[in-house]
Amino acid sequence: MAMEPEVRANADVVLIPGARTGRDPARSIKRGPSRLPPGVVAATQRERLLDGLVHTVAQHGYQRATVSDICRAAGVTRPVFYELFTGKEDAFLAAHRHGTGVVIRRMARAFAASPDWCTGIREALRAMLVLLAGVPAFATMAVIELDAVGPAGRQERDQLLTRFRAFFAEIPELPDGVAAEAMIDAVVGGVYCTLQRCIDTDRTAELPDLLATLSLFCLAPFLGPAEAARRLA
Image (tube, rainbow, N blue to C red):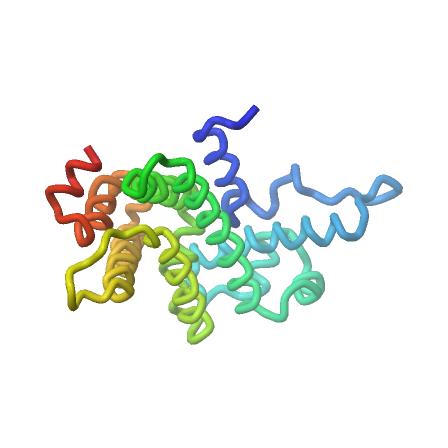
C-alpha cells in the first residue's frame, strides 16, 4: 500500500542532513560481540557527521565552523572524520548534495503525480517549501552558507539550479524573440532568491506561505498572469 503524501513527506524530512542530531543516543554504536558490521558503522558515522556539520554550520557559519566543532556535534572522532571526508569543504558538499537530492526527488514525485503541468509546478513547489521549512538548519546551511564555500559552492549551486529546468520542459511556446532557456533561468533564479531572502531573515518556517506567490510567479511568464491565476484556482 502506498504511503500518504504527508507521511512520505515526513519520511523525506528525516533523510535530510540536519533533521536529526548527530549525538542522538538512538544512533550510538554498540561495542562488543554484537557490534554492527564495519560498513554499517561507517555509514552511521557518516550520517551523524553530516547532521553535525549542518547544525554546526547553521549555528556558527561555514567560515567559523571547525572540523572539531563538527565532530563534537556528531559524537565522532577527528580520525574517523578524515577517514570519510578530505576536509570541511568535502563534508559540506556531501551534505548539500545529499539533502538537495532528497528535495529534488520529492519534487519530481509530486510533479509526476500531478494531472497537468500547472498543477505539477505547484505541487513540486509545495514539496520543496515543506521540506525546507521542516529542516531549518539544512535550509540555512544549503542556501545561505553555500556562497561562503567559495568556487566549489557556487558551482554546486549552478548545478542545482540547472536540475530545476527539468520541471519546465512542457512550457507553452513563447513569443518570437523571447528565449525559452533564458526565461526559465530567470524564473528559477527568482524563486531561489526569494527562498534565500526568507531564510536569511529567519522566516524559514514561513516558506510554505510562499506557495501561491511562487506558483503564480513560475506560471505567469509562460501563460500570462490572468491565465496562470485561473489555472491555479
